[in-house]
Picture (cartoon, helix red, strand yellow):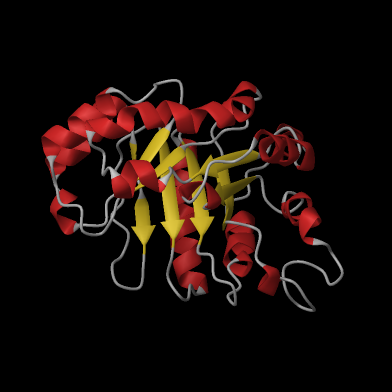
Length: 248
C-alpha cells in the first residue's frame, strides 16, 4: 500500500540532545536510533556516502528498529563523486550492495539515493549506460545538482528505468518535481519552512499517495537545527486513516 514515509537525513547528531531538543537528556548515543524509530518509520543514511557499514552495524540497525522501519542509504561517493558514474564504478555498486543484503532480505531497504556532484554536467550516454546496469531488485533515486540535467529528455530516460527524480528543495532553488517512477523522493533542505509551505508539500504527498505512489521525504539535517519540527508537522498533515478508523 502506498504511504508517505517522512523522516530526517541522519539521526546521530549529539547537538540534537538536551532539554527541548529531539533526544532526551541522558540517552546514550547507542540508543539514538531506537528512539528515532519511535518517531519516524524511515531514515536517510548519510554515513554510507563516506564508508560501507560493517556486518555488525547493519545487524544493530535491524535490532534497534521495528519491522516496518526503512533505511534509505546515500550511495557511496566512489560511485557518484570519484568515478562519476563511469563504467569503472559498476563493480563497486555490487560491493556497496553486499553489506546491505540483510536490509533487503527483511524488506527494510528503501530507495538508494544517487546524489551527483554540483559540477557534473549532463551526459546522456554516460547516464544511460549507468542506469542500464543498476540492479532492478532495488529502487533508485537520483539528485541532479547541475542545471544542464533539467531537461525533458532526462525525465523520459528516468521513466524508462523507473528511477525517481529527486525533488530537492533548497534556499537557492525550489524543488523541481518530476514524475519519473512509481514512487517519489523528496529532500526538504530549506533553512525555514512555514505552515503554508508545509501544507503545500503535504498536499502533494497526499495526492501522490492517492495515486498509489509512495513518497519518501527527508528533512534537512543540521547539528544545531531542528528539522524534526517540520517532519512532525508533515506527519500530522499527511496522516492517512487506518482501516479501523475509516470504519469508525
